[in-house]
Image (cartoon, rainbow, N blue to C red; front, side, top):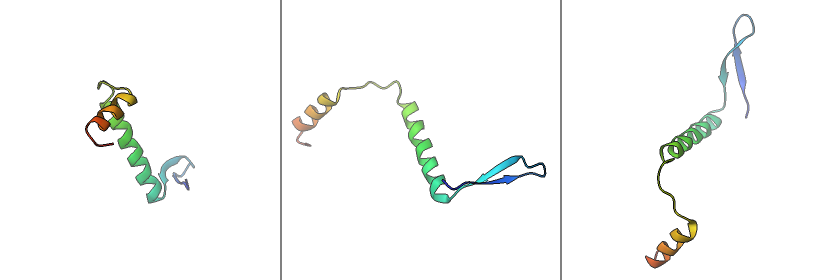
Length: 60
């Protein structure tokens, strides 16, 4: 990631400039993490069970 910093008069970093593509990837990652957090308490099923259901329903 190509990062540029904006600094104040004392040389302290006050802001960051990143390429738009990197910014969009960060936003997508943040969204993914939010979805994971929202679904934390949802019931889970083993992969084998899901595959069996999909086969039974003719999806696989």
